[in-house]
Image (cartoon, rainbow, N blue to C red; front, side, top):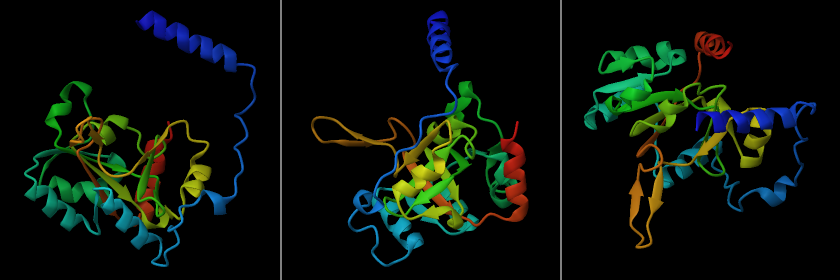
Amino acid sequence: MTDDRSRIFAAIQAALAGREGGTAYPEWDDELAVAADASDGVGPARAFRSRFEAAGGRCFDGVETLIAYLAERGVRVGYCDPALRQAVGAALAGRFELRERVERNDLDALDFAVTRASLGVAETGSLLLSDADTPDRLAAVAPWIHVAVLDPGNLVATLGEAIAREAPSPYSVFVTGPSQTADVEGILIRGVHGPGEQLCLMLAARPADAVTARSNTVG
C-alpha cells in the first residue's frame, strides 16, 4: 500500500513539474451566487451567529462562558493550539488537563480541542479551517467537541468572498455545524465523520497572539 501511494504521488508531481503556478481562479457574478436572504440587515456577526446555531453549532462571546459550558459537559482532557496559549489556553489549563500536542494513538483521551478558524461566513454560518491557521487537522476533526476560535474581524459576508480569500491555501474546509449524517430511515446521527459538537468562540485577536500565530505557522 505504501509503495502504491508513493507511485501515485510521484506521478502527480511529475505531471505538475512543468506547470508554472496554479490555474487562474474563475470569476463570477456575486449577485447571482449569493443566497437570497444573505443581506438581511442584521450585520455579519449576528447573521453568522444565527445561521451557525441554526446548523447545530453554539457560539460563545467569552472564555469564561466557554469554560462553564465545557465543565457542564463533564469534559476533563483537551487540546489547545499553542498559538492560543495566552488568549485561551491559560484559562482552560486552570480547569482542565490541557495538552499541546495531538497524538494519533491517543485520540480517545481527548474530550475537546481548541483550534483557530481562518474565516467565518455570515451567508451560511460556516467556519473556514485551513492549514495556515489550523496546523493540526486531527485536532479539528477527531475529538467529540471542537472549539473554533474566530476573530470577529475575520467575518466575511459571502461564500464567494471566503473562497476568493482562501484560494491560495493548499488545504481548506468549510464547517457548518457538527458532523451529521442520516440513514435511509431518516435517523440523524451526529459525530460520525467529525465532531459531535461544533462550538465557536468569538474572540478578537490581540497583537501578541497574532505574532505567536505567525511564528507557529512559519516553518
